Length: 176
Length: 118
Image (cartoon, rainbow over all chains, first blue to last red; front, top):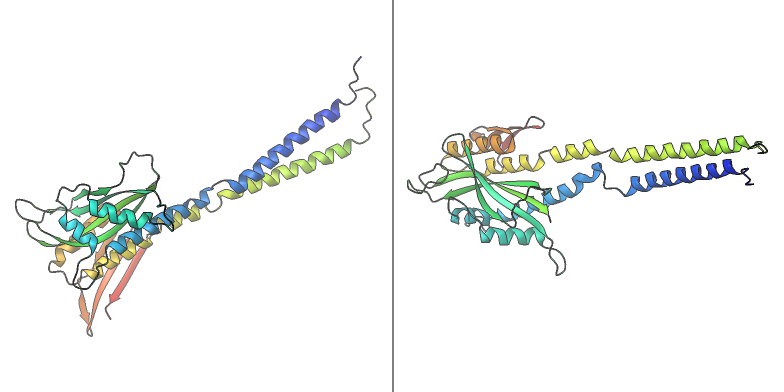
């Protein structure tokens, strides 16, 4: 004959254990999880880094020279492509770290210019990796005034003569 | 359960009460982590860099030879790529200073400035 006197105490023990585990789970979860309120921190760090890199590249070395980014865009063909000079310099600026190892931030750069009417065209400039669509990317932009060679046979954004044009360099950056 | 002594049932009851109060406190702590989401979103949405950048290009393009073309570039590209209405006056002279009136509005943030050269 089995004795069932202690059943209530057993049930109480199980209930207390479950409540303690659930409480511990909620408390630990609350402090360790990467919450929605923190998402802007890494995004803004990446954005500040990209803005700084583009700003550095848009500052001329002296009063009589043009900025690096302007010279790169003036040297690229009007149809665009993967410009090595932009890629090397931009990648160096955003991936430079203390020590020997570099960071691994990827980017994809285009620039947008206005055609002769009110439409715009985006022209690929440089990319370190193809976009797959799954990246959590931030966009940084920089206005640049360029004076690109153009002719009737080889127009640049609707311009058939060499003249000052404002274009917008847009870079998508993400950590890989 | 016939011979079970149930004198101390209130102790068990208090135990449950304390446990449940801890449980609900933990729920409150858990919920508090979503606080700040809207703050984070508004921080990301605030177009500080956009305004600084468009202001910079407007001021630096004062001396271009074809201001109308550059003005159209800035307004059209701002609207199509940055979702922002940008307008600025041609530079005019007020008591030996160049002045440009700059307007920026992206629907959330509005920025107006009377830029004056040194």
